[in-house]
Amino acid sequence: MFNTPDKWKSENSLAYLLLLTTTLCWGCNAVFARLAVGEVSPMLLVSIRWMATMLLLILFFGKNLFKEFKTIYAHWRYLFLMGTVGFSGFTTLFYLGAYSTTAVNIGIIQGAMPALVLLGSYLFFKTPVTFTQITGVSVTILGVIIVSSGGDLSRLTELIFNRGDLLLLVAVVLYAAYTLGLRKRPNLSSIGLFISLSIAAFVSSLPMAFLEASWNQLSWPTTRGWIIIVLIVLLPSFLSQICFIKSVELIGPGRAGVFVNLVPIFSSIFAVSYLGESFESYHGLALLLVFTGIFVFERFKPL
Image 1 (cartoon, helix red, strand yellow):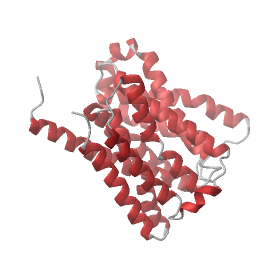
Image 2 (tube, helix red, strand yellow):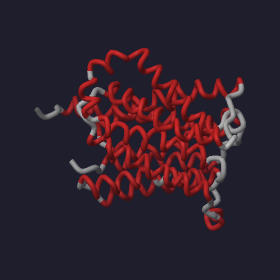
Image 3 (spheres, one colour):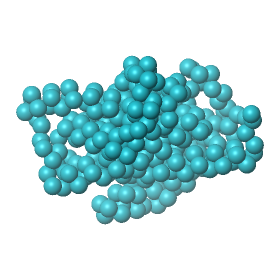
Image 4 (spheres, one colour):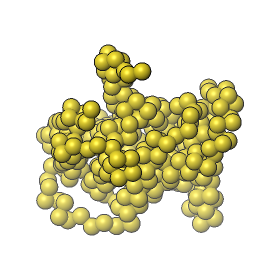
């Protein structure tokens, strides 16, 4: 049965709210990643993050795991791959890359994610894309570039891609692939899917934590480190992932992906409010461009 206009508007409004929550939490994660430096080693952080998320999900929604066990078992290869690529793989590369690159580079590289999702949707799923939508994505990316370059576009000519940049670029590619892969998800509830992916993420993160320990690089969390981990588990790990999975279910990966451009914007806002960094006029311009780009992309999407 076709959706009524009221239902269509309701679903879109819900998706937008979910994506706003998602990007707010991911914006917090960028700040948490910076705060975690020196408080806990990165690979151990990834393992604790997904172990705690997994246990939290099982504690509150364990019945979904048993109820949908047959479906989960039948598709365990897909679920393990998705959890490894989108959860443990992305976060591992993100935390490692953040150690050895600049904030300018991080913002620009993250801004490439929606474009990769849009390109992947077109190449692999033949999702219709209009010139106006491409323009909308370009406008949002321009906003990301402005805020990432500190309002001085001449800084872009001085960029030198190092190991951290390459790790972050691979991380962005992995999450774009994960976003696209959600279109082929098995017939599981959002919670059942998330529990399965978190288990896969925890299991697949263990080898890197063991490797970190074998290299004598493992560092247990400090008191402040544990506080940061709790926040990471509750916001970017738990709440945001549930919201993102549901939003992709409602409006598809191509439309959901463009909202990721809000992440570096929110990261800057949180850095201003929490870390005491100044808010400049270019932050306002970047926000305007990002929201304008999302509006154009949504307003002129193919019917």
